[in-house]
Structure formats: C-alpha cells, structure tokens
Image 1 (cartoon, rainbow over the protein chains, first blue to last red):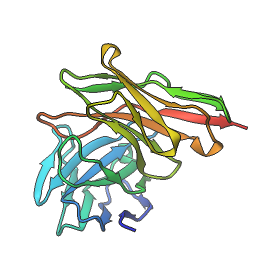
Image 2: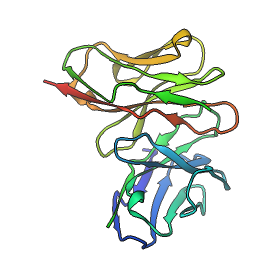
Image 3: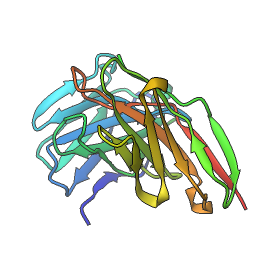
Length: 114
Length: 114
C-alpha cells in the first residue's frame, strides 16, 4: 500500500544534542510537510517542500531545518533541541498544494528531550 | 488569517448514541474545510472535506458534516457511535490565497462508554 512512513516512531535525545527525524513516502507526491504537535494541541506547520522549493513558516525557529534529497524522502533536523521541542512530529504529503489537496499523514515521531 | 475553533475539548458518549462535534471557522472567503481523526499514537486520517456544492458531505466510517455559512460552522455528526470511534478529532480550514497550509483547531477528544 502507498503510504507515508516515519522513522523512528519514538526518539529520545539529550538537551542540545542534534537529532534528525526522517520521513519517506511511496505516494510520489510532490509536496511534503512537517508539523509539530505538542500534547493536547493542534498540529502546527513548521515548513513544507513543493518539489525542491523550501517554504518556511514565519514563526518556525531557526533551530529547525529540513532537507529533501529526493521526491521520496524528507528530513527534519533539530540542531539544538530544547525541552520545549518535545512533541509529536508529523510528516504529511499531498499532490499539489491547492487548498483542495488532501494531505496524507504518517504515524508521527514522538520526540522526548532529556 | 483563517482560524478554527473547536469549543469542546473533551466529549463522552455512550456506544450507540449519536454524536455531534462542533467546529467554527473564521475566514473571509469560501473556506475549504476538513475533518481529520487521530487515534492514539497514530497520524491523522481524513474523514471528510467540503469545498463547494451540497452542504451536507458524507465521509468515511459513517461520519457526515454540514457546512452552514450563516453560522460559520462545519459540525461533524455520526448517528450511532462505535467504541472504535474513540479518538481525537480535528477540524481544519485551508485557504486559497497566500499561505496554503491547513489551519487546525485544537481538537476534541472523544471517549466512548460501553
């Protein structure tokens, strides 16, 4: 089945230690998104790629970076994680970025910062 | 900028009872409205969406939603709830200008009593 895969499902990192979360998709969608979802809150968009074009949300901290080496893969890099970065990180994809484009979500990676 | 309000943080219903989850949006033009469901530890799954046309839309798992422009609402309904419906439900709005990302409400957690 075509899907969005996130690895790992659970990640523990130390305060200030760089961490990378990964997302892959078999849907061949050209748009990939990263959302941050803190406990009992709505998902909040960090950034998205339209093909190779990177689009950063205005309020996304510089501590968060992303890479998309090819259509299938996208990475979220947190350069110096703080305790406030503990959250569920959701990857999503869509075919096109029209408002009618359905977004397909992966299962998420839960990040713990110790 | 668009916004979404889900007034009910937590709802408990008995299995077999009817369900209505409320969603109010704020957006100047015609909104693109979505309902997503998130089971524990999982990503988000699209239940249904409204773009135009018939204001009563049918979705998966027996859910439906009604768009009421006069009330700026897009409430989700199900006539008979099953225990497997226990999850977090998110209403979201998409825009057709500028920022293309979804704006999510804060979610409603549904608990189903036997």
